[in-house]
Length: 351
Image (cartoon, rainbow, N blue to C red; front, side, top):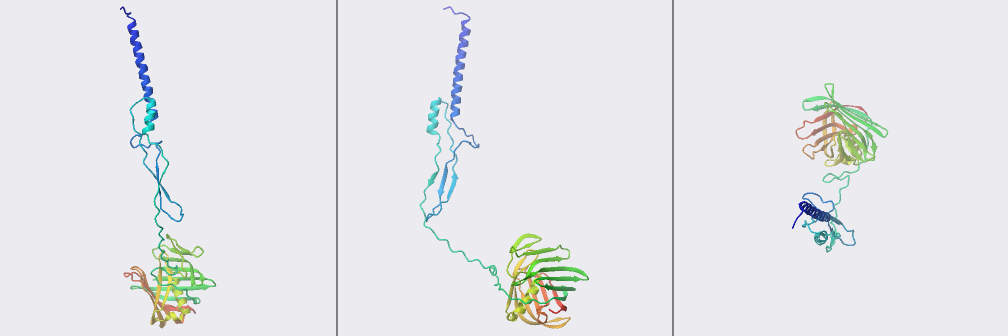
């Protein structure tokens, strides 16, 4: 058979065209297959995967509100199927791909209701746990007076002055200590009076080589704040600062003769300017004689024992002839502190 030499190239071209059309059709089927599946690559979040929520119902009784916790289960991974015609792909996906199910409620048998144990009663504000009970005292305030003291700290001796200035419903109290003409300590308490006696509003404490710190008794807000700390304390009834306690103790003892007997106690809250606060319980020891430049003074001695290793130990000998203001006082912070002592030298005024 005679074949035109130009026919062979034409047949080859037609075969190549037919193969190209078949390849294109295969690619189109493969693309259709890919469009039917939702792929999830390793460590890659699937944007279309639907999580099955497993909800656990907490057992309750007596028609109480149901507490439900939603816990998302891991998303199901769709299988990878071989390339097949489009219709078959739809059947495979419908048969094997997980369907999104509604949240499953796991029924739990209700447990018998258990009544909670009654909470322990909280101590009243005036009765801190483990502390002495703090009564509400009557007070008799001394009149205006200035008391001058010899101040001693170890082998050092200087002078001190306690100025008490009540005026109407306000007061100011200042304690100053000097050594060789140089002021070492200045404490100032100011405020008013209430049903519990002295009611401080502001207390400042300055010491040599230190900056002034203050405690602010915010009576309207019912709290005590501090200039050098963000800490705040509740404002307790009858609370005193680190200098007003001396006059408050005198006012309480003056109004209560029964508290001048051995074993009797006077208890109060005392707050310092460094956000320190504690309950001070003064126990009456009895009568003791104090030797002063004014002569021998028959005084009633009170002792405040420490409650912690670095707590303040205080002793006060109250002079009955001067409205029970201190004829002598000692304070020491911790067992290794020399502390300091006040011993009366003279009184200006007639408290």
